[in-house]
Length: 305
Image (cartoon, rainbow, N blue to C red):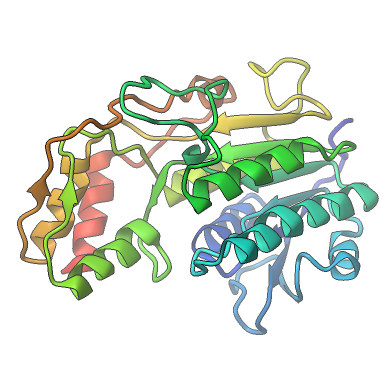
């Protein structure tokens, strides 16, 4: 399976109005791609040169086939973060994403880039560092981790297209729907009580702009398919890749959040994961984070003041 010879690749992005999806659209536009931005509500796609809004349900096979026709690549970002219902999460994430992937195969799309998460890995206390071959979470883990795990497993079973599972940890960056910059701090503020955390627990993170950069590079073929994972995503296979920035701890994150909200964090004394997310594969593919911890935390603090 080879990259299509085109001067302007066409890329379909699902969840294009979301925190990550909108940034991916912007990164693709910067790279000169023609972007089909899939959203459920009219007027919510990013207004950018080369970005065309497509309104519909990405999980509907008929709509998916239409929007994917003639595309070179697709990026899937949809996950029902606001739903506490596991069946809804399964229907949207596992079933919906898999149906969309099959539609991409039927449309002759070369590559599917899926936004997964490092939450699929078992990061129990004492686990140590985590690379792409690490053990995945067991069935008794939380809904988010298990559903994301099962989505990855389902995509691994969809043949006929090169699949890349991009796995970020906590995604920092300004935005109304940002979990770590907006929603979790808001929950602490609304609760009116100081957050509890294990100070030395690893806080694996990446900035949304650095995440979007590698996703866009993968989608437009700047990272070519290869026979070996050290050179690029396996041609015709399903390749996970971890994307994380430099080391940080829960103390780093929660001290900024609590301080901005006029609180003092409560540091718990209990076992916690203190390893790191290994990103050697992404580095081999030419990716390196540009936003450092100081910049990311300054942006976080500024948004809470």
